[in-house]
Amino acid sequence: MADRLQVLSGDITRLAVDAIVNAANASLLGGGGVDGAIHRGAGPELLAYCRTLGGCPTGEAKITPGFRLPSKHVIHTVGPVWRDGSQGEAQQLGLCYRNCFRLARKHGLRSIAFPAISCGVYGYPRDAAARIAVAECRMAMRDNPDLEQVLLVAFDESMAKVLQQALSAA
Ligand code: ADP
Image (cartoon, rainbow, N blue to C red; front, top):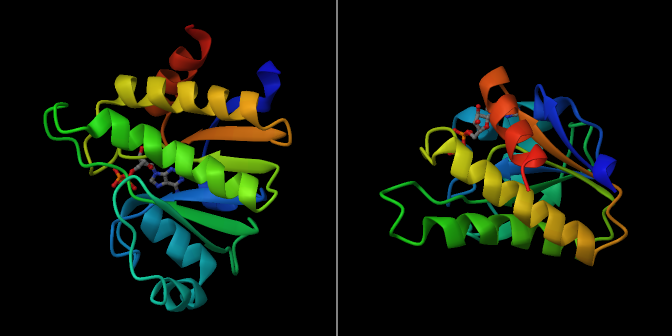
């Protein structure tokens, strides 16, 4: 059980999993950070496909093919922008994970990798975000035995440490 959920350091776009998650913005038309890296890796077909989706509200998720990425799919979700914590940020971040897992289940996916949603330019405090990520992953894995591998991917060592701490707590 423990090994089904792991923290990994590195570039999420290199992973050959059933789906990588994109911390997108509401337009789904690309951006910086992990979003930019995913669009670069997937090629222009991804942007063309995303144009047909009509965007994505905060907390929701949409699935696309992975095109030129090693991952089969990309699940795009839009994390909350951190304001002061009283604007429903935690609920919205939890919903991001939940809606990604809902799509994973619907499409019969067995492996999924998440970046640290909202922990970049959206400014969510990393400790709090990591605790939500771990709690949501554990809940989803309990409910869906078909999930063989869930990866929490950190792009830098400090984020990896924060995620690892959240994983070993509780
Ligand atoms: P958000 O707008 O949701 O905050 P960002 O893309 O700015 O999204 O950042 C989310 C997290 O993704 C940050 O921790 C950032 O360091 C990380 N990140 C950026 N590029 C990659 C990548 N190629 N692979 C994995 N994580 C990445």
